[in-house]
Structures are given as structure tokens and as C-alpha cells.
Amino acid sequence: MIILKTPAEIEIMAEASRVVAEVLEIIRKEVRSGVSTDDLDRLAEKEILARGAVPAFKGYRKYPKTLCTSVNEQVVHGIPSGRKLKAGDIIGLDLGAIVGGFYGDSAMTVAVGPVADSVEHLLQVTEEALDLGIKQAAVGNRLTDISHAVQQHVEAAGYSIVTEFVGHGIGRQLHEEPQVPNYGKAGQGPRLQSGMVLAIEPMVNMGGSEVRILADRWTAVTADGSWSAHFEHTIAIQPSGPARILSRRLARTI
Ligand code: CO
Image 1 (spheres, helix red, strand yellow):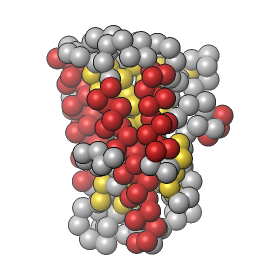
Image 2 (cartoon, helix red, strand yellow; image 1 turned 120 degrees about the horizontal axis):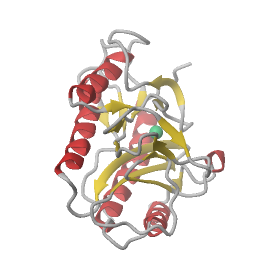
Image 3 (cartoon, helix red, strand yellow; image 1 turned 60 degrees about the vertical axis):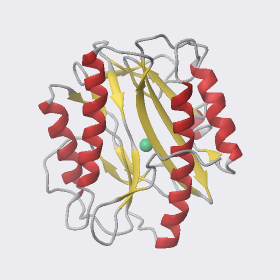
Image 4 (spheres, protein in one colour; image 1 turned 180 degrees about the vertical axis):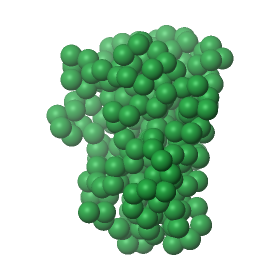
């Protein structure tokens, strides 16, 4: 069942998502050669708590950390560790927060110093695919209009969509219905309605689409070792016009 949110609930979700956006912005500025993924995780936790919010991922299905840090060929759900970033790496930063019982969820992939042009292009195409998906998130469309727009852009660039993981409805639970695949024919699935809140999150590989899970039971990596990018926003479908991007990254406030 898809749970529609009231305008008042959407304001609370906007607050949770704003916390996520602000903290991601802070973390992004700390990404540099020599910093460990654990350093970033500690900072994320401190900044979430400083805003009166609760880390959403820590303890979720026994996930041990606040942040997911997925480096290079890691697709999603990389667990922060003592691993130090190196110039030329890329790192996916995925963060969730709870405010007033509601979740916000967002992710981005950033370069550690200068990276190869081909890698910069992967990041750009993945973020554009997210933006194009969000543009389809409007009343009058159906769910897979989002999916199709994402897939079309990624594949036109010669990259592949990860199909093992999908976006999701979000609210009082991190994962609610509907699932939001990043692939598929347009014009299918539920009609988009005002009050739907979705986390749209394309995961894009430079090589093949296949992934496997490491022995830590969390980290998803590309099967062929090619590098991968991930961007995610929590968005709310409006009564008319384009979706509201609840996790849009603006300047920090505290
Ligand atoms: Co998500």
C-alpha cells in the first residue's frame, strides 16, 4: 500500500531531508586524500545529532554505521572503515536521518581530487539521470515514467543500470511502497499522486550491470570491477507541477 503524506507530514519530511542535505554538504567538503571513511562517518553522526535528528541507517538490519561510503567499484552500502581515500578515487556518500518519526534519505558520489575525464562523465551522467527521473515525478504520470527516463539517459551514454537495488517510497519507514526501479518501460505502475514521497536513486556502472555482495554482507561491488556512481534524492509529488526535492543541497545553516 502506498501511504500518501499530508502537507504537515511533508513539512516534517522536508526537515529530515534538509538535515541529510546539510550534513552531506559538510561531509563533501571533508572528502580529500588521507581522510578515512570512518572519519566521514563520525562527522556525519556528530552533525546529525547536533541538529536534533537520529541517524537512520545505524541499526537498520544491523547496519553498523551512520553513513554508507562506497569507493570506486563499490556500488552501494560500503561500510566506513579505516580505509583512507586517495587522489583519483570516487566515493558514494549515502545518508539517512529521522526527524519526528519521519525519514529523509539522500546520496551523492564525489571525486577525491582530480579524476579521469571518463570518471567525471560517469558522475555527471548519473546525476543527470536522477534529475531527469525527478522531472517525470509529477501528477499525470505513472511510476515507470521515472524509471524509463533514468534508464534511457544512462544507456544512451553507454553505461549500465544496476537492477539489483531500487528506489523506494519513504515516510515513517525508510522503505515503503512503491519500489522505484531505475529501468523499465514508460507508462506502467501506479499513477503518481500528490502526497507521494519517493527516494529516487540511480546506481550506474561504467561496465556491466552485474553486482555481488562482499563477505561483510553489505558492500555491493560491480562484478567486473568497473567503477560505479550513485545519486539519490527524497522528493514529494506536488498537487501540480514538478516534484519538490526535499533533500536539495543548499548552504549549511549551523
Ligand atoms: Co534510499
